[in-house]
Amino acid sequence: MKKIKFPTAQTILLIIAGLVAILTWLVPSGKYDSLAYNKTENTFTKTSLNKTVELAATQETLNALEIKIPLEKFTNGDIWKPISIPNTYKEVEASPQGFVEFIKSPIKGIIEGADIIFLVLIIGGLIGIINFTGAFDAGISWLAETLKGNEYILIILVTLLIAAGGTTFGLAEETIAFYPILIPIFLAAKYDALVPLACIYIGSTIGTMGSTTNPFSSIIASDAAGINWTTGITGRFIMLGLGTLICILYIIRYATRVKKDPTKSIIYDQKEDIEQHFGNTTNASLKLTTRLRIILFIFIMCFIVMIYGVSQLEWWFVEMTVVFLIGAIAIGVIGKIKEHVFVDVFVKGAGDLLGVAIIIGIARGVTIIMNDGQISDTLLYYASNTTNGMNKGLFINVMLYIYGGLSFFIPSSSGMAVLTMPIMSPLADGVGMGREMVVNAYQYGMGLFAFVNPTGLILASLAIVKVGYNKWLKFVMPLVIILLLFTMLVLTISVYI
Image (cartoon, rainbow, N blue to C red; front, side, top):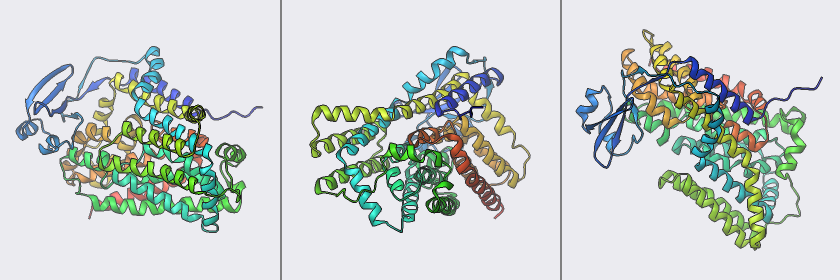
């Protein structure tokens, strides 16, 4: 009997899209009223179903709507998305999503996700150009020789640096750029491709899970909860530090086992294919010439400029994409690549990541189906009602699971914050705990589920590494269970001290 293969990422997402479409026929449609700040007119726009009303942008308006958020959080731009207004949920006319909507959803998702998709394609072109120059192979050979016997340092450094980016400015989608760069380095160190995947993806996830100054998570959620973002930051630092330590030890344990015996690799059956695809080489004859060093310097500077721009200059996908495009052109000039060859190589490199771009689009399509079906607010409404009458310990752990579940439907951290915090954070008042605990439960719940969330970034990441979702689950689930138990313990203790 022929062995049944696990479906591809694209198929998994299409199945999920179909299930979400069916869900729109079963779950009642509903909406909360929303409130948005109009900076130009200095007014609030209150939207109720299809009706909009302009209100004075004052603290009295917020108090009247039972929104416990200081006015300056809106006026200074901390909250820039419409927020849900508490106690305004109402059922609306059903909007079930049929077969036509299901078919359209991937296309709509690709259009809506064009910003990140173009970033991915341009990065693919850049990778193709730098591989063509030979600078990458020479750099890998040099690094492999330099770290001989101490390759585990790579795991610690990469995971720590990515986690630092995650906790400070929400490094997530940008990590897509790192996989083609780091995988050959780890392969040269005699690890399998799961190790760099884990260092990058787990590093980013544990970093954003323990967000400290991340404007797209801890800051916007705290603002939407009506508290200062530094409230509860000590607990998040503890979670970040201990969580990252657990992740690093877990990755090193697996990596050491694979290094000693490659047959212990979860993806051992793909070893030759992956090494051939990523050009694993430790050829000592490849020398780092001055020209190649300059090329690698430009390549690294692209990422430094990107990180600085995102964290300090409010850059987003357009600016990031431009950085990588300019980097590719500069490398082409220094590498003396002829114009027609440059174009061919760049297009081929972009084509190598086209599958990843399509995955991102399909994932966006799932969210579009849910939003058009108007079931997001309904799920939030019923989730908020489940916590009535609970004691502190049970309440905070239920909130953890609620946020984990909601993140399947709302994988955006900023979107989750503005949609749910005005509804969820006041529930903490009723059980006698600080609202920062709800912010922490939101971060930890979303973070834990992000390790495996198929509507998040993991399937796009796996597509680059050429690893199946089933094999990732086999690798990461023990870690998720460890982190889940640890998180529940930390949350339970923190509400009683």
